[in-house]
Amino acid sequence: MKLVSYLAHGQRRLGLVVAAKIVELSAHLPDTPDTMLDLIARWDCFQPQLLRLLHFPGSLDLSEVQLLPPVPNPRKVLAIGLNYADHCAEVGRPLPTEQVWFAKAASSVAAPFGPIELPVVSEHLDHECELVAIVGKRCRNVPRERAKEVLFGYCAGNDVSVRDWQLRTGQWTLGKSFDTHAPIGPWITTADEVDPLNLGIRCWVNGELRQNSNTRHLIFDPAAQIEHLTKVMTLEPGDLLFTGTCGGVGHGRKPPVWLKEGDLVRVEIDTLGAIENRVQRGTGAMKIG
Picture 1 (cartoon, helix red, strand yellow):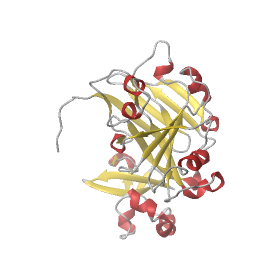
Picture 2: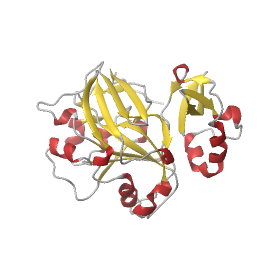
Picture 3: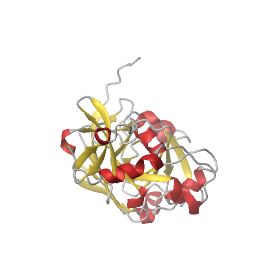
């Protein structure tokens, strides 16, 4: 099933996507949680009721609403680097023998069709199409063979990167955490409907195909990622895992090709849908409060 967060008539709502229409959860199930985090955390309770809603006609066209990030306020956003062989080759790095993880700030999460900010402090803006896994249960020390029990679903994402900020030190977090630099969506497709190891993944910039691969080429798959991360930390419902990008990023070209103001970036993953984000120059204006 496909779960969506959206804005309609000024109200944030949750829905099911059925035949390109939205079935509003609260209209049929008044006790449905108000947030995606709460719905994921209480999934075992609500799943049987939501399955029945798949037979209801949708009341809203997708074009009538503003889609929000399916998980607007995750507790953690974690991303793995160097996880496709072709990407390692294009940036001149050997295949990793250990998983390379970094954090993206939760404030970088953005809507599936919202703008990507070109920051005033850099012109080295780059795209990275990625499969994003959503954690479904609070968990620690999960062996690989049981990882499916805690993977709630998947969506498309773009690990937007500011390369000079990323690479000026050995720590990547700042270069990966600018506001709007983690657009995700357009919805969550629950894990029971997804084979995460056989999904075509592509990225276009202004209609030009820049990245084109398949998740079967992941070096460390989502199950291995869950096993590794939960040796270190407790993962919680709604945590986002960016699972790595394939070859074709702007940084890997000679000379590099950076995103510029007005560019339209589309990330598409088989069965999961597509997100599109236009690059918009930031103002650099001070904000307090």
